[in-house]
Image 1 (cartoon, one colour):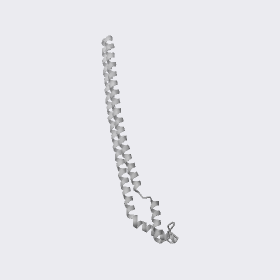
Image 2: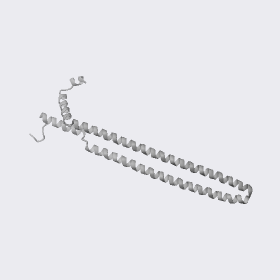
Image 3: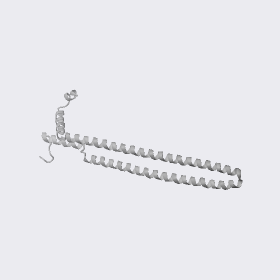
Image 4: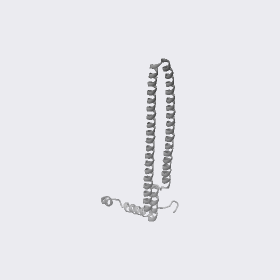
Length: 184
């Protein structure tokens, strides 16, 4: 690095002076901005990660509850079907006419349980869809807040090129090498 300083053109000293002046004038403020940007970015990332984990936990809990409810209903339906079939077989062996009547009742009971199962399933799916929509909306709001924060930070930030041009002009004016147009 010292080789670069020794082999640098004579203007390098002036550039270093400009850099030193820039650091003296704006260094603390720029470091403060950088620190603030880093803190804001870390906080936003942590909030987003926490929101994502919460969303994942809620979806997993809903999936588990839905699976348990469906398993319970399916088991109940299987048990109901098995019980009804046994009853039909017993009645069929005693009286053929009675068996026909029982079969009709069994079919009605199966349809009622099936209808109840489909109604419950539809209700659970709607509840999951509503929760998912609410979670999506919350994630969208968080993302929009993040975007607004980033836009606000970008709007307040001074561009490095603009700052460099300003400081170069100040240095040239201080040195007396900068002539204003129409200043003859």
